[in-house]
Image (cartoon, rainbow, N blue to C red; front, side, top):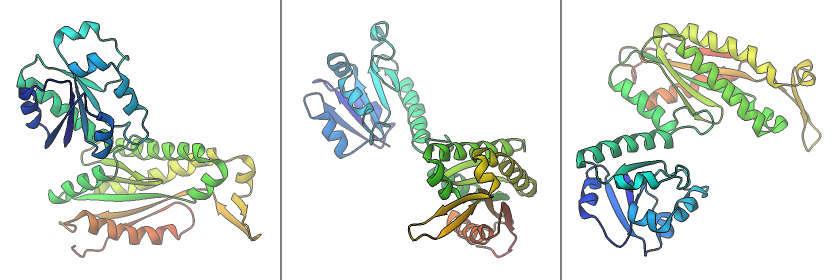
Length: 307
């Protein structure tokens, strides 16, 4: 991870040395430089702001980053001395965390390590569902494959989601995604055993992992809950006609059934998969087939060929 240290005219070389043991690189920017432009040109993973800069400039630069739609997510950590704490009003400077320069080097490194881990998780978290995103999904699956874990990996996809979004709006579409995330996570949680995971690839695509022996019952439970809940997101008119009927620019009429969910499952039995990409490729083939079947369905790939 890369960090930027924003400081006043004085640079604490010992502090920079401590930071360098935690981060892959540390760029020092002094207050007289164009801080915002320098950070925008080469965005870091974490911004560290020294007390000498914060006490002199208050929250102006911090507020500017917070209001930015591109880099507003970057974690900003204040560096204070213990005597500063009584004068710091919570909320005056919208920091994500702080460290004390008066702590021991080991305490500072440990705290920054926790801050970095949390930052990495949050940056790879879907902002809507708060589920792990694509990087975490790939890393988790690959770690399980490397360990030889006998697991079922399922990719879930909502059928006819786009026509629903077009008719009801993105806000209602987000509610569908949140409901789907809850259905999957709650169903997986009820298995009450190790080797489970749920992630949100993006859009209407989800991934979940469970022990092989639980996958069939889990898929059936997710489908049952989804089919029961999803009808609540339609108005009576659409339910009565069995879905959304729309007319295109050319005057052609199309009917999109009530949303359903398709689950494509691959099994890592006897070390079948060595790489995430192979499992994902097989699942994509299965999902294309499952999505061609009307209604909510799942399919478990039981081919025995090793990858």
